[in-house]
Length: 481
DNA sequence: GCCTTAATAT
DNA sequence: AATATTAAGG
Image (cartoon, rainbow, N blue to C red; front, side, top):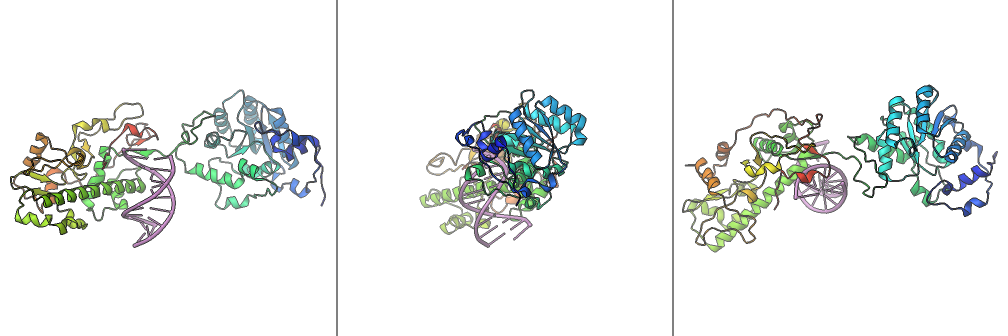
């Protein structure tokens, strides 16, 4: 097959990627010129012919090398060494170009500004060329519109298939499915070092696909040498379960019934735009966990009290305190062991304060959402506690030992007199056992289909979503065990 | 596919 | 700590 000789400088570059690499300069291997024959069929890339590329790099050496490499494959090349020049060329001669290959670290312009401006004044696909292999820097460029990030030092293989990007006229568009297969990944001579250093084209598609999945393209961190690799990459915002949201969640469960309260139905019933099934699933999982913990604690307590024989139980109640009931895991039974009345008339509120029951909680202000500007977002008048019973509402147990908490003091807090009397008043004359639904009617408006809840994400007043890392400002749902 | 659960990640 | 994501299994 017909071979072709490269002259020395070029050859040296091709055979030694370190030549251009600022960190791993291996001068020894650059000394001996190697003459390698290159199959001509490899040199003429079919799609490259007639493709015009604007190459931008302030380093003239890099610029020359890249240009020559591109020429080798049949590309037409225009060059610029400054961002301003590049932009001028783009503005005036965009129609003559198919692709931009640009170093982003240019002295006269910030890289993101460069990419943004390029994207604004042209629709040409931009391939970024840089030695900066920081993940943030790379992703940042992709988010700013680059279709591909080519790590220096580049190889012949890297530039060979660049023409394919020229068909991505709309940089945000994702390649057609199966597109990755059309990219050849042929670098048999590449050692493991190179393989880990440079991006393959199939990697590029993955990146582009990832980019398509990301929701926010803003707030790219501009620090290049940031150690916290992942922190600056825009992430999907985290949902904050405000009291209002949680209340809707609870209402949905109430209406659907605990047995048929599945994520999809809950989601539908909550009627909150932007809320995802996954959000519900996650919240539901936590919610169920809290219920379970609660039930366990109740059973444990009642079992203990049963063994202590600390108080005499009314006959109809006592059956629920027998060990066989206390150890059962059937929810139908345990969920009905909610409220017991002690002989002396004091209530044993087993579950009224659970997450099923929205408590008005004056101490809850700090749990309301805060907008990005730091101002508290006003919530509706009812700020319901999303806490489980253990943190807000307790169980008063009067027995011969007096009022008791449990040993670790966590699970049982005393109701304040005010709260306690409120309960008693509200349930005055009510039969506790077997009257659970009726009690609920007392405390809660039977919610019908709620009006859509506005998330106001577009206004930047997002009351429900928060950036990563700010969630510790909120603490809306504390169901801690 | 959907749901649940546990484990793990962020 | 809260929420998201993932994987496995029903």
